Image (cartoon, rainbow, N blue to C red; front, side, top):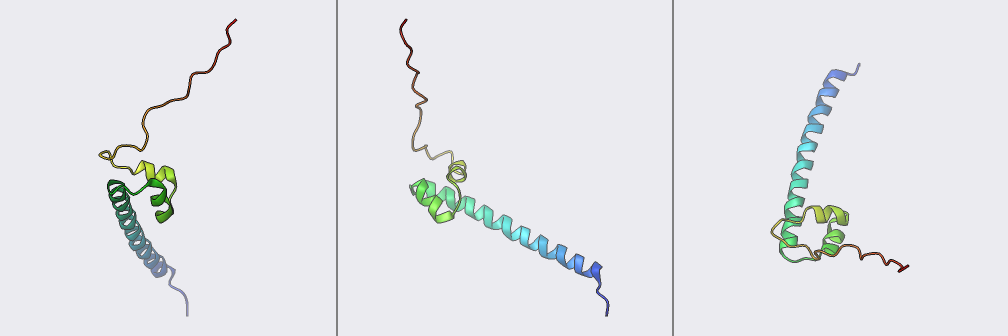
Length: 83
């Protein structure tokens, strides 16, 4: 009995389509949950631990209506020698 590669390829495409739709849905739900966690005043470090994502990813998903933990403050001016 021979394999019907065309049928297998079509079935594989359908599986990939279903999985990518599920993945997109899960990622959207994660974005919503992370935004809700920010609004609920859960610390970013705890969100990182719970989600397994990086701190940069969590900061990127901070909603606009939630102020940052710290603001302002650039680098200190360098000390210059008086000649």
